[in-house]
Amino acid sequence: MTRSNSSALAHPHLTLTFNRRQFVSLTGLGLYGGLLRWSPALRAAAVAEPWNPDKPFPVVGRKLRVQPVLMYSLPTRREQTSWKSWGGIQTEAAVAEEIARIAQELNDLAQQAEFPLEFLPVARVTTPEAAQELAKSPYDVTLLYPSTGSGTLLRACLAARPDTLVFVRHRSGPVYYWYEALSVRYLATDATPPITTHAETDTTLAHVEDVVVDDQAALLWRLRALFAVQNLRGTRIVALGGPWGKYAPDAPQKAQERFQLEIQDVSYEDFAPRLKRARADRDLAAAAERWVDRYLALPGTRLETERPFVTNAFVLYRVFKDLMAEHRAQAFTIKSCMGTIIPMAETTACLTLGLLNDEGLIAFCESDFVIIPAGLLLRFLAAKPVFLHNSTFPHQATVTCAHCTCPRRLDGRTYEPARIVTHYESEYGAAPKVEMPIGQQVTFINPEYSTTRWLGFRGTIRANPFYDICRSQQDVEIEGNWRQLLGEVRDSHWMMCYGDCLREAGYAARKLGLQWVSLSSTSA
Image (cartoon, rainbow, N blue to C red; front, top):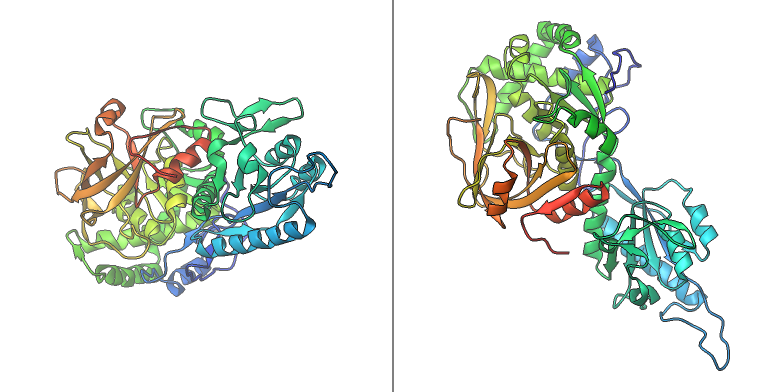
């Protein structure tokens, strides 16, 4: 684990607005810029940029840079012998037309993408040496269009990046030779290792699932999955109170090794005086009261706890955001959120974490690094907040999902109805009991402790009960082989998001070197 010191340069406070085509990078200084320690300037910024539930939900993450490559080899006519391979690209004129076609298709695809995506100019590659030279350029994913060319050339192109997609044409344009010739000689399968030594070169193989024939939509969802993979890797996360793993003490170390997570360990000893200063700040206290008024005015919001708990949750929200800016972190988590933080803040962290998620940041309770990598992946895949919750014993195709911290803006647009009640175990503080729409489809990820095995499935919200358990709770109907879930009962945390991300999650899991098990069927 890494630990950052609290001294750093100050940066101007930024006010950011977003729409569907404006994306915010969570790398560098973090989402909101901010100042790197609590100061008069930061207090002024907290008042100048109030909590604003009307701010459009941002799509966050470092943009995915894709290098399209047209691979080809032009033939020379020879009399009375075979002189060309299959394929409709046999002349320079055909090459030029194909490059224009690719560029137009990718431009259209970029307009459809709901995540930050950049296509570089199409590169022409006709030799292995050219492929090797191109690999030195700064980009994330190779998008290979192998129209013609030798197996040696193909392997050189596939070796350019570990993350490579292959697009071949059947009906969408001039037919490609490699529409016929692609095979497991060149592509990995689930039964073969990812690295294979060939006579010509050592090649990191693309997988058969990395190949797309004609289908632009199939290409887009794979790019979405690769965007999530690229942004999960190297995520910097503040762990207030330190990291741990539920039933898996090695989970933080495994998360660092597998996903290159940068865990910023912040102690409560360092945090306590920061929070004390913030709570003594009259300007911030006044701002927090105004934010509470606005929060409670949201449609479907009912206050069923004491108002000072909500006010203190907004003060805590401001200080958590400051910590993220100080450590230049994309995400936040808190340990001992059912104990240590309560007397310090005179509230619980439940509502605070929901507020952070609702405005586009990434925040989790419990500091459980068994589930946090899955939550990060799902957040980047769905472009919506995710819900970390406890699991229950499956029965009659039903599970109950419950936790005291839950986002309300789960579709990335509107705030779901919520009763603001106490945290269940302490009967103290402020926690949202969020009501999810009956019939809403959701996606789950359930890691097997700190192993490489992840389980995924879809479900449908059937009820929002109010059992004597954590406050935000849903009875969910499992889609697929629910009895298989009986063998996966681990008393573990799961991650949930609105919509169907199962196909993308499984694809991303393979890219991350994980064993993926799906209970629900998926289609390409």
